[in-house]
Image 1 (cartoon, rainbow, N blue to C red):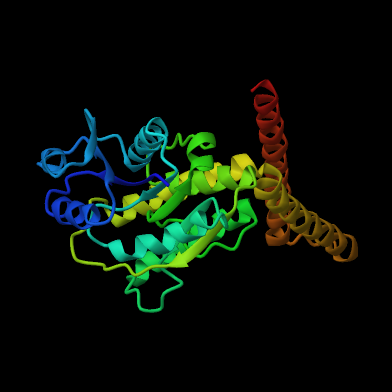
Image 2 (tube, one colour):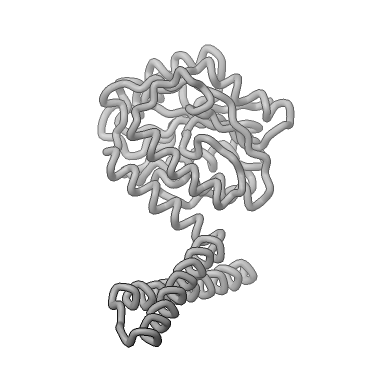
Length: 292
């Protein structure tokens, strides 16, 4: 079985050498996507025998993953493991992610930080990851615990049939949503992540906002009725209730409760907008899919 480890890297000269040296002891094929680094990341990786694909400028994590996917497909790889370049992942955990695919029990294996109680995940990261994971599970109908883990194993089926398009950090969610749509098998294994100071090249606020917006985009596209329609019906019911309540009070006492009336009108307006959005998006997505 032909196995490759793919590493998206941006300005990781401090960590890339030690990671490649550790990986080379076990795996022959190391693919590094140098995403427009301004330091020695690319030259170090090349000197240590990795296959390096350079982006002229920094495009984003998603673009690096897409480049690694394409290279793995070109090399006819059977299993691709994606591995972060910041030194937070343990090489020893790779064998765990490979096992379900080798045994033909899964098509995607996620290294979950939440299945291992010893992982020292900062609290603000936990909140963000769990929020995004919840949105992903709504769309996929699965019970994933860590939708944002970059430590994953992908089978040849995934490499051949899933084509990531998201440029940013939302690519992790995109791949899961597209894979679930095609009924691919997704499972998780516990991993240990070592968080250190200043390892991330992404600001936590901008990173979180980018991933959240990307996740919302894909969830809403894949499930417009559920994402917009259900809240629309909820707001419409609330709005109608308060409008009827206002009319009832007015009929009995000739008094108008302004607060009730405003809530009623606001609910009806919001509900109508959400329902219209659900219908328009559902119709548009259906037409595009039929055209494809």
